[in-house]
Image 1 (cartoon, helix red, strand yellow):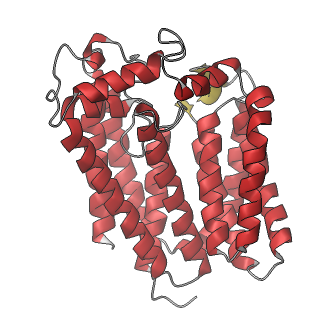
Image 2 (cartoon, one colour):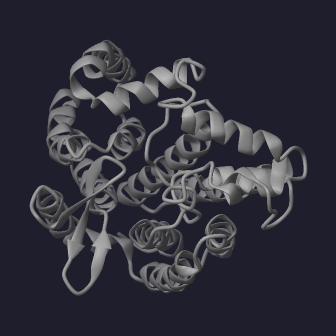
Length: 358
């Protein structure tokens, strides 16, 4: 076992339960109870996945990918549920709800990793075409929900895998230039009005303080008021306790506002340091991977977790536009927590089987 990886993942799960409790216990105790159960399930999945040779994942990658696309399509039926303006949740009768987009990203990393490892010497243009075909369908389905945050997660994740697979730099630069050129078109024709308003509010938070700029301004007030050491665990009279941060999102997308307000700069710095340690441990695992598949899977999951953390924290301190994207292992949500722990379990499997013969 990579005990450092296990320790950091376990620590983040515990901190997640504490964060969800501190953000939601003013109104209900339902969320942290469920988060605690999911954290235990996630740790079990992490350990079990670690003991299975990650090379066996090639037999599960395609079925998991097909299933995730099927679930994404189902969100457009009567089984889909809308939250926060996006119909991105799927209700399974007798089971509950889950977000297929999070499963799609994990299965996408597995499928792209398997493809790139098998066809490393393929012409770069063909490699881009086939990779685009693999990720294009799920990305469009997620964007149409519309869930801009989960759509953006694909970009750094897949780009990191392509770079590590040897895609020439000129192709990377060309892709970035094309993406930059497409921003005005996407802004005017691809986004919903409320999404466009969020980006405008990001550029100028004062433009609509009581409308589109409400969330970012309240987040800045909450985190800024925490100061160096914070107002204290479960402090009263705070933005979170008084409901200035909406109770429907404070324990999910805006969990960082509760952390910053109650634990201050020290709490934020500690949390970011633990995530940094997790990412460094994952990159070290990629460095000692026994084969191309192990390298690509580890780098893909590293890119995914990095972007989630950067975007989630960044949007609450006006470094990034507001998008509905959770913080790994910290934000409330069973699907995402279990999927992240499954991905970390595969990374740990790469470490465990780093000396095994292919």
